Each structure stands twice: as C-alpha cells, then as structure tokens.
Length: 272
Image (cartoon, rainbow, N blue to C red; front, side, top):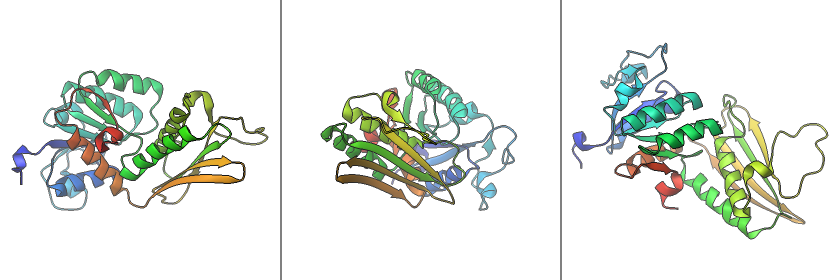
C-alpha cells in the first residue's frame, strides 16, 4: 500500500451538501487519496468547524474554509459539485494551483463553458454531466443507435430527479441529447425540442425532444426513446444510490494526475 503522504490530496467544494459529505467520506475511506481540504461559501455555518465533527462523526483535522485558493494550493485535485458561478471561479483558482479540477456541476451555460475552457489551457479539467459508468455507457450506446437510424425515428429523452433539483433538463439528459445529435451529424442546438405546453403543433422531423419529471427523492432516471413506425427502441439507466457519482468523481480525480492540461470527460477516464 502507498504511504499516506504519497497519496493525492483532494479538496471537496460544497462540503456541507449531500454530495460534498458523501465525497468526503468516500475519499477518507478509499485508501487511494487524502482529504486535505473542504470549502464552503462565505457565511456558511460550517466555516471554521472540523469537517468530521460537522458531519456528525469524529474529528478528522480538516477545517472547513471559505478560502478556496488557500485550500487548492495544498491539493492535487478538486472535486466540485456546486453551482455554475462558483464552478467558474473554482476553475480559475484550480488552474492557478495546477490542481486537477473534476466538475460534476450541471446547468452550465455557454459563457460558463467558455471560461472553463480557458482555465483548461493551464490545468486538467474533467467535466461530465454524469460521473457514473452506466450513464457513460448509455451515452455511447445512444450515439451508436442514432448513427444507425435515420430521422424517421423520433428521439425523445425523458429524465426524472428529486424535487430539489433546480435545473432542467438535467445535465445527463443534455449529454445524451448531444450524443444523439452527434450520431446524426447535427448540432443539438438546432434540433432541441423542450418545454412543450398547450397546442404545441406536430412534432418536427429530426427534432430531439426532452421531458423532465421532478418529485420525491428520485436519484436519477434517464430514458432515450427511439420511436419509429410500429416499433420503439428504449435505452435506460436508473440510479438508486448517489454514491455512484462520488465514486466516478474520485476515479476521475485519480486518473487526472500527471495528464497534460486540457478538457477531458468521463469517456476519457473510462477508456470508452
């Protein structure tokens, strides 16, 4: 086993959130990395507290901070499931610290992505709408099926998440839509059909439709429907435990060590 001081040090942002806490516990238990920092937004009640104690357990010596650059400076990787504006800030700071930045944040707009791309000129950034192996296999399959079928097959992407999710369609649904569009050799922005309500008119040939469900504590469910005349092909993935996303993010953080600066995704990490 590698000596602990030789293991990559990882900082978790949004440490008080559900995913932040799950990541912290996973890193500490992994034996493959060290938890060296925890970051929260200014004014959060966990600032200045020991993270282990704040999570209801034993002290672990990691003090929650609102100084991301100070935390990143002593880390080899940052895992970030926060909000778009925060993620853009963290991307610049992680690049300054030359730390691998793993981004699981969704709801990123083109202006956010442009700033992340600029940061990737100086550091490794691994960004994915979903960190799970199963979803990334689904994405690959979606592209392959879309390549095989013409526009007479309507494509609909249906996603379901818990009531607290703030963005729609989900980042995973958009990732699947991008894969379907790439399979057809078109840009998703040109064929995206979302938010139908009222007399919406007939479906346009070649469009890729999206529908979102929100309720309860649904972790994440995605279906890609290819609907033809007299038959349908349905590809689906159901997540029952958020730990799959945390495990994928840790795998990405470790994979990113010693890579050249640039933007990567989970397809790269998983060798797909």
